[in-house]
Image 1 (tube, chains in turn green, cyan):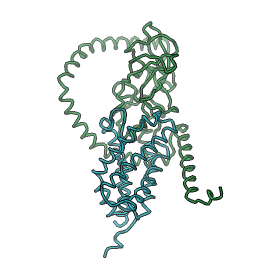
Image 2 (cartoon, one colour):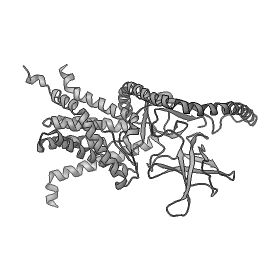
Image 3 (tube, one colour):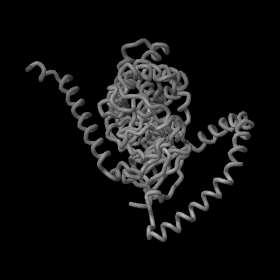
Image 4 (spheres, chains in turn orange, purple):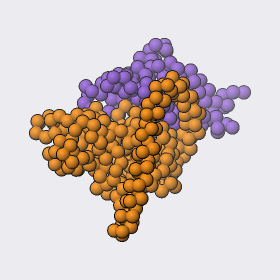
Length: 282
Length: 179
C-alpha cells in the first residue's frame, strides 16, 4: 500500500479519473436541472455558433445543389403522386375550414380561449450535429431570442423529432426522440384503437432506436397504420402533434405485455430545417 | 502579426470543430453503414496529427485541453468527453511519434488505433450516463467503422495539419529563430 501511494503516476491517473467523474456528474446534473445554461456556457456556445452559421451556409448550398439533381430525377413519379393528392386536398381544405369555424364558435360558446391543441410554431435551421456515433443531438440557429424554452417539441418532415434540451441566446440543442437517454423526458401520447377507444401512453425507445408506445392505459389493440399523436398531458407539448404510425405489435421479452412499435413520421435521419412548437396553454 | 501566427493553430482547431458539427449534419446518410455509424473525427484527428508533427511542444497539450472544453460545451453541454479525448490523443500522438518510425503508413495505423480508442471511450461514457443502451458487441461495428473513416480523413487532411503544425506551432514564436 505504501508503494502504491509512492507511485506518482498511479496517483495522478487516479486523481484524473476522479476529477473527470466529478466533472461529468456535476455537469450532467446541471444540464438536467437548470432551465437555462450558465452565462459562460451560453456565451461560448453562441461564439462557436457564429462560425457554424458562416460555414453551414455554403455547405448547405452545395448539399441542396446535389439534392436538387436527385429531385429532378424523381420529378415525374413525384408529380403523379402529388396530382392525386391535390385533387383530394380541395375537399379536405373545405371541410377543415368548416370544422375550424365550428370549433371556434363552440369554444366561444363554452368560454374557452386556449386548449391543449393551441400552439405557435417557429422555423429554425440545423447548423450542427454531435459528431459521435451514439448521441442524438442537433444544434439549431434560434434560441432564447426567438422565445424558445427548454422542453419544447421539435418537428421536421411532418412529425415530432425531439425536444429542446438546452436554450442559449442565439442557438438551442435538440435531443432526438430516438435517444436512449433514460433521464430524457418522454412524450405523452395517445392513439385511437380499432374499437374506437383512446389509448394513452408514453413513447419509449428500444435498442436500435426503435420507438415504442408503452404504458398503454388500456389493453385495446392498435391496428397497424394507426396514427400516434402527442396527448398534451406531459405538460410541455401541445396535443395533436404526429409522432408516427403503428408498424407492428408484438409481445415484450417477458411475453407479458404488448410491445407496440412505431414508425416515426418525422425526418430523423437528415433534418436540415425544423419547426419548434410552443404550446399556448402554460 | 507575431501573436496571430502563434494562435493560428488554435483558430484552425476552431474551424475543425465547426466543420465537425456542420459536416455531421450533411454526411449523415454516408456515415451510416448497416447497424453501425461512424463518428466524424475532424477535430480529434487534427489534434493527433499536430502532435505527430510537433511532438516536442508541450503547449499543444494545453491547446487540446482548451479545445476539448469548448467542444464538450458546444456539442453536449457537459464536460468530460472531448476534454479527456483530445488531451489523451495529444499525449498519445507525441509518444507515438517518438517511439515509431516516421512513415506515413505507421502514422495511419496510429490514427486507426487512436480513433478506435477515442470512440470506445465516448461509448463508455455514454453507456455510464445511459445516453446509449448499445452493448459492446453492438457498438463495435461503429467503433471499427469510425477507425476506417478516420484513416480516410487522415489521408485527406494530413498535409494541412502537418504544414500548420510545422509552420505555426502553438504559442511559439518561430521568428525568434529566423534572421
